[in-house]
Image (cartoon, rainbow, N blue to C red):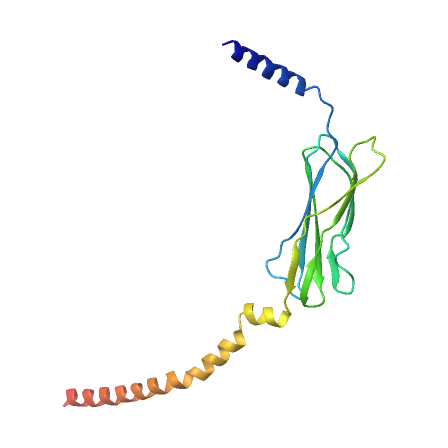
Length: 191
């Protein structure tokens, strides 16, 4: 019983002293996601950047930069690849979305984006971090994508036209023989 009392006193003392700690500096978790299922030449690709502040104070002067997408390979359709966020409060998040359009097909290495921020108001030097890295992705040619996913209306129309003779000729023969025999049958009934 005496040991239980000592354990309880230690637990109460530990809980009482943990509340008096100083706030921890801001720590950002940074992820980069490609939201498209298919990456196609000449079609939009949506990229989402997520920042999560898991620290005890606000992250200040947050600057996100992604130098992965050069102007010779990609066109920025919406959003910006370099963004500044004034502050991210503790326990909250911020997201940013960029829409790009690839001008070439082939394999492309989607590397990490970079973030820099001040971990507290009195910090003199900015912390620098990298996002998660989506890795290598295949950008398929538009012709190949269109071949797989288009409705192929012209193909179906040509199939219908080509299959018509094999359906219409037997039907026409059956119909002519049917009308011929019905005419003979009605003549026999009339007599």
